[in-house]
Length: 123
View 1 (cartoon, rainbow, N blue to C red):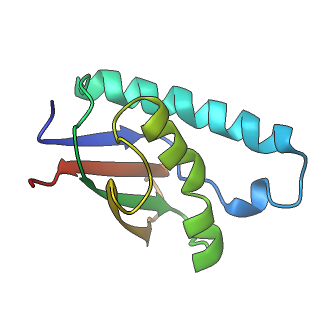
View 2 (spheres, helix red, strand yellow):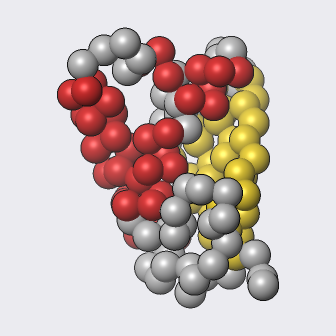
View 3 (cartoon, rainbow, N blue to C red):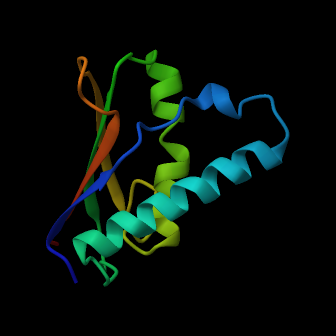
């Protein structure tokens, strides 16, 4: 089991506007896309074992433009679902996950990406 792991995904987290008020298939395809990105980041970080208890997660979205807060927070859903699907977290409820998230603006010459830091909480 990992004590802490840093996943780097070469894409900025999506906006919730991409699937809100659209057919379920739109969210499904976004979720599958992020599941693949998380799987690749998991393999790169060599994080193969599922934690037993609570995990502290800090997600940083770095992009050329900032999203408003509700679209940013809502856009974390496919990431959290993918972390659960790939057993990097037990579940995305408050009992198993302590989540913090932020977004940062990047300048020219930098590529959008998402950093996900996961750390096991003792006890």
